[in-house]
Length: 100
Length: 341
Length: 174
Image (cartoon, rainbow over all chains, first blue to last red; front, side, top):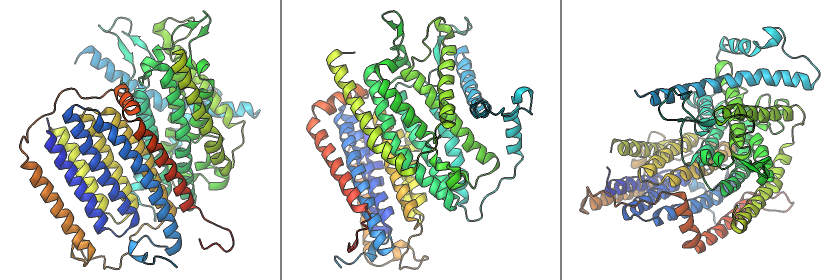
C-alpha cells in the first residue's frame, strides 16, 4: 500500500518536470503542455491529501482545477494561433515587440 | 477455475466475435438495403442472394498489398487504426445486453450478460468514445496527405462539438434513472404505465432521444454527417492513404461504433431487454430486435438524406442541438425535482 | 504497491518524454499516456469519478484541442537559434537557470518529504468515492465557487473566440 508520501514525491517529480519544460522548451505548444503537467501534479496532491484526510474536498478542488485548465488551454491556444498568424513561428523568443 | 469464471471468459470471447461479425453483417445489410431503397437488387453473385458478399470482401481486403506513403509518420500511421478499433471494441464492454441468466441451470448463481459490470458504465462509455477521435485525427495527420489532414481536422471539430450534446442527452437520462450504472437504468425501465405503455425512458425523454441519435450519427461519422470521409470532396478523408487490413480496421470500427451507439440507446431509452410477450430469460431477443431497428434507421437515413455542408453542420451542432440539449436537461432536472419521477 | 510503481513510472516517463520531444504531436500523445497513468492512480486513491473525468475532460477534450491546434498550424518542428546538437542544459541564459531551478526544486521537495516522518503511514479510512456524495458537496458547500467557475468558462470562451478570430475588415490591423 503506497503511503501519502509516495504520492507526494511522485507529484513533486511531475511538477518539477513541468517546470523544467516551461523553462527549457522554446515552443509555445510544449510550454502549454508543461503547464498542464504541473496542474496535474497539483491535482494528484489534492486527491492524495483528500484521501489521507478522508475528505471529499480534495476531489472537489480537482474539478475546479480542471475547469481552470480547460479555460487556460482555450485562451492560451487562441493566443498561440493569433501569434502564429503574425510571425509564422512558435518560438516565444521571436515575440519581442510589445506594440507595432 | 470456477464455472462462473469460465462462463465470463466465454461471454467475453462471444461478445468480441459477435462484434467482429456485426461489421460483416452490417455490410451486407447496408448494401442490400441501399439497393432496395434505390430500386436495385444489390449483391447477388456470391452465395445465395449474395449473403457471402462480406466474406468475399474480407478475403479481397486481406490479399491486398499494405501500402504506406513515403512521407507518412510510420509509428503514428500504424497506431491510428489500432486506436480506432480498440476504442470501438472497448466501449461495448460495459453494455449489458440481457437479464441475469444461469444458462438453463448450468451455473450455480446467475451471471449478468455484460462483459464488465462497472457502476459508472455511462461515464466509461463517454470516456472511451471521446478517445476514439484520436484514431481518426492521427490517421489524418500521420498520412501526410491533404485530404487526410482535412478529414482529420473536420472530424476532430465535429466530434468535439457533438460530444457536448451527446453528453447532455445522457445526463438527462441519468437524472431520471437516478444511477450511473446501465444495468440499474435498464432495471428502472421494467413494467408498464397504465398497463399498456412500456416504462421506457424514450417516452419521458423524447427530445433527449432525438438529440442522442443525431449526436450519435455525428459521433460515428455516418451520413448525413460523414464529413471526415466525404468522398466527393475529400476522396476518402482520413483513411485515404490506408489500404488492405488497416483500412478494414477503420471500416470495422465505424460499424462497431454504430452497433455500440445503438446498443447504448437501447439500454438508455428503449428499455434494454424488457419487452412484452417474452419471458425475462429470453430478453436478449428484444435487445437484438431493438438494436437492429436502430441500425436500420442508420442505414435508412444514410440513403435518404444528402450530406450537410460543413458550416451547416457546425451551426446545427452549436446553435440548435446544444441549446435544445441544455433546455432538455433543465426541464428534466426541474421535473425530477418537483414531481420526483 | 507494484501497481502504484507501474503507473508512477508511466506518468514520470511519459512526462519526461513530453518535454524531450521535438515533435509537438508526439508530445501531446505522450501527455495523454501520462494522464491515463494518473487516472489509474486516482483509482488507487479511491476516486473513480475523478479518474473518469480525467480521461473525459483532459484526454478527451483539452488534448484534442491541443492536437487540433498543432495540426492546424502544421509547424511541427521547433525552430531554435541553437544548434540541434547543443544539449539544452549547456545552452546559455534562462534555459540553464530554469533547468537548475527545476532540479533544485525536485531535490528539495524529495528531501523534505522523505524527512517528514511517518513515511510509511497509510491512509485513514472513509474515502469519499460515491458520485452522489461528491455532487452533494459540490452543489451545496461549493455552490458559490461552482457558479464563479461558470463565469470563468464564459469569459474564457468569449476571449478565445475574440483572440482567434480572423478579422477580414479592410483597414484592420489584425
